[in-house]
Image (cartoon, rainbow, N blue to C red; front, side, top):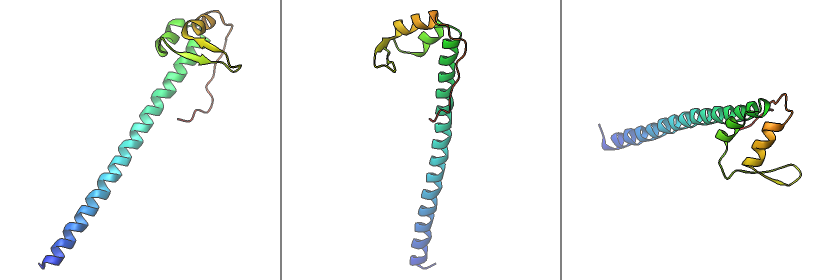
Length: 101
């Protein structure tokens, strides 16, 4: 085989291998993104269940000790304050809307 043909075959092989590994990387990223999305949705659902069932222990497992929320009216709320609200609230239902991750 002439040298030029061998060089072209090698170059084509490198291009194809590169494209193949890129496609595999994208597939892995898509699977990873899907897994992450499912984890986050599960955590959000656990939070809603904790609110609905007045389950302070479940809520406390989900958030860090230094967690701080900002309420719709602009006030801050610590983990301890929110836990007290969850315990004493009259919440009977909680649903998750269309969550985009």
